[in-house]
Image (tube, rainbow, N blue to C red; front, side):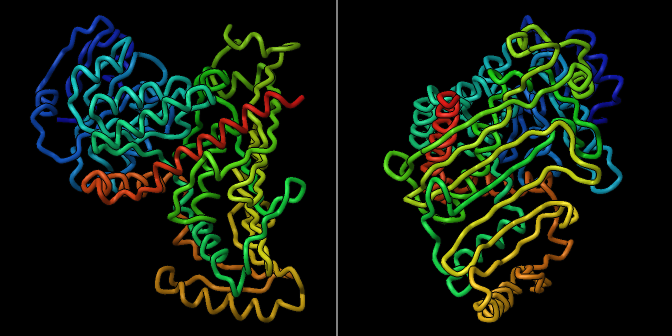
Length: 478
């Protein structure tokens, strides 16, 4: 039996208000369920891990299924209301199933319902919930799933306002008591240049010691630039209109900022639990809009008008989309500054960019990603004193040589006053591939809950405390 039978069948399901089709199971908004042989198979499947996808409002939910995993059932139950988000999710999974190289074999059981969370908790055909989409209320869905005895794999951010932080604490307390895994999708830990940067800042002969810095001159600076109009999996990413509602999607610091704060914690204090009550001091916050014309908004959403819920931010026929933010904070006395920026469209040949600078007593270790780098992330070591360059070069060559067992082919080249760590293309597998890396680690923890490090939960609390506090300060800054 075909996984989807055809794209037409999918569109018919959406158009007909949830009527069933071969290879699918659907439930109308009144809760009446239509079943077939695959639906029954889902209930009797004996695979150790059985996935459920809840209201997939972001392409991250689909990227978790970009490949198959040993010991994971191919049958995935999807619970969502009818509409744009569900249609886009189904198209992505179908694309993975039909691709020419290494196609997947997912079989989707679709349950359409006005209250998908309640329906999922009532049916419970799986033991893992994948949540990706609207960020407002996401922590409520996570908390309800965990309290119902389900493991969760969720994209960032789990919460977008400080008022919801107690719910996060309650969620981890429930997960701990029930021996469940609650895990967020931190893909940037699997980027090769970030891995190498982490190695180098813990190599005293190259980096020295991390400088404490100050609010005016932080010792860590990370800039993340994204674009509202972008391509995903080779296709234009049409964003739902609600993406531009900061009350549903959140803002830059509380959203993308979660990746940046996670990297700082993971890189500077690896495998150490951070206590948000005493280790973090958020100093400054700022927020500002990207201004969009109606034509730009329509191009990225396919919507002919700004929806009513955006009216308060539409001024002079243009939308003030408050997606940008900046934050400065101290982590155990080390000062860091983050800038999260959303431009409308990338420059020709470019895309999203990442800059990360860590300052040590001997050198800076930098990641740059601009036109000079052909829009690829590259790692540089920049000695603080030109007279130290020869000694740092020798130390860097020794370190890179030691890393050859893990990453054969990396090297060192001189580039002006900087030392360039060269990375073979085979390690540049891209952001989308990192979702599978996160999923595999999650499944490892799921099979052996005792294997998950204690610092993971503590540092998730620290991360979301930092980002929501930074956003709150941004609202206080004029």
